[in-house]
Length: 185
Image (tube, rainbow, N blue to C red):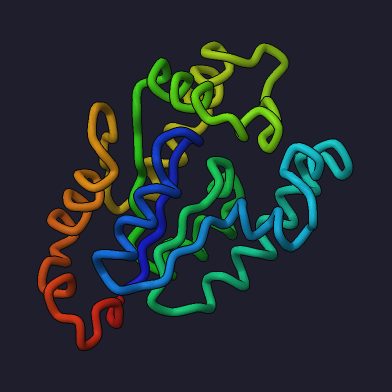
């Protein structure tokens, strides 16, 4: 059982991935953190050096490696689904869950993360709420086509979101059977 969490940054992908992995006895990985670790610099610095297209190439390379693993909950960067090859890879890897939240909530969550500004570049020239709304408008249909399940994280604790995913994907038997919790997809 592999689970992929997609959605805009600030929707809770990393935190929910940790919760799911803990409950299911799986490993979890944040693909953006893996890209930064491998490159030795922040995503913002990668964007500065090689631009968005260079970053997207690094992202595709990391996803190709990460999706070779088994028993994994994978939180991917918000733009990972922009490339069709990534969408195909993620869909064949496991259950794809799109985490959503209201743009104002996303902005509050991003603003509340002290590391976000230094690690993540703006995706447009406007920034803030307008940027979130514009980028979401462009990506919404892509997220929807890729997702097996949509979960709204608005007003929910990460543990509640993880519980909802487990329930809606009917993984409760896996959660209670520690003998082989993440073994089938």
